[in-house]
Length: 401
Image (cartoon, rainbow, N blue to C red; front, side, top):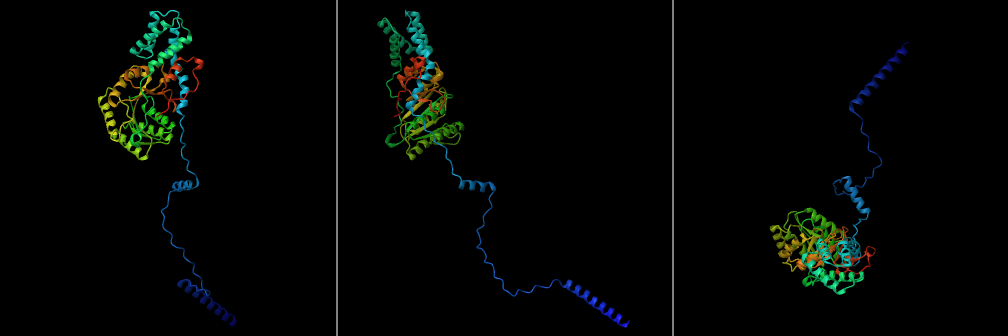
């Protein structure tokens, strides 16, 4: 019995000692891990990299695309050669031949050409915007020549009318667009016109005519009243790979024109084409400003060509416009637009007779290459052509000098 109690006492003592040991260990914390017996080889540190600001995801994507994808430049258009454009002349001007062509042939083919018939011929010519004085001259010569002919066949009448219309359209002036600058400098062309005549669009088409004939062209956007005009000109220029000099909206037009000629000289282009703001011919202030543009540009050298843009559908009203512009800036050539959409092709005769300024280019439609050099023979052929032959044969156009 005594032995059993002794062993119980020993067990209790041992249990108490174990409990005390656990409490002591927890109160002192964990024991430190002894160092390893095998030394650890230190890892070599990487060289410090330069700090870089994090870029947005879309920027990184753009950079990645730029490095992996080839940049595609917009294609440069090659304008249609001016020589081939005269093929359209016969077809599109055939809309006018009822007035100047078929109408005259029909009247002259009557068995008896009395005063009433000649009055109808006069009225037809005036209606076609030939003008009063040229009409009287044409009728007088037709009366004299038909009287001499006596019997008149259709071929004779057609030839007679062809000769008289050609005579009325001829003018002692060069019809080519002058692009030759002095002393190796670019040729300078000033484009002027009234509001609504399609001046800026036509200016872009003139640039295409020059490029088609192998010229290097720079355009000056001196129409600073409308930002859209400069944007439009840049669109036209970009399609043929030409540069545009423009200023801020409302900038001095003369200054922009001056800078354009200066830039063209630096780039050694062949032609500088300056587009001016459209203006009404009866506004003295605007016309004076146009005169200023001319004077400032001439500090570089003489202006080689001043083209007046006229809407053929305005008829006789266009003559007054042309007269005022001629007085202000010495118009040297006329560009008639919308000639295909008017039955009044006689305006060509009237403009030249009134101003002694040649028509150099004619607009035959809304396409980019629907501006063609004017040729008297082809013009008259188109007016007198039969419907079946309106498309005619291709005849080489007049080159741009």
